[in-house]
Length: 78
Image (cartoon, rainbow, N blue to C red; front, side, top):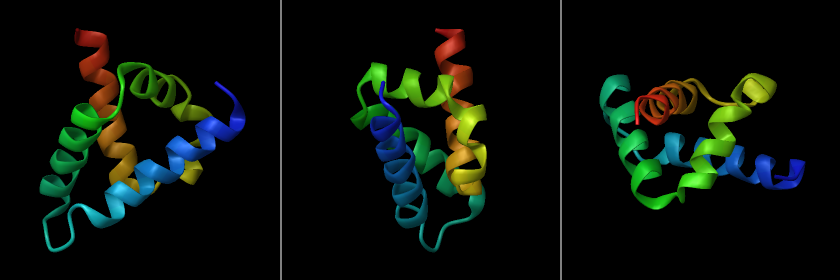
């Protein structure tokens, strides 16, 4: 995956995290982000962003980070 593609995934994860849980608790927001990304992102997209999270951790907002850590754990468990 190119750096540009990865940057786009980061941007999308941050947008989802910023918008999907407005008015929700942090915990509910994280759950909604996990549900959304799992449902609407192709498996290779999820795998790539999770595999490269450490590289760009400072670029992710806290909700996106928590959601992606949960998605990463689910991918490893599968």
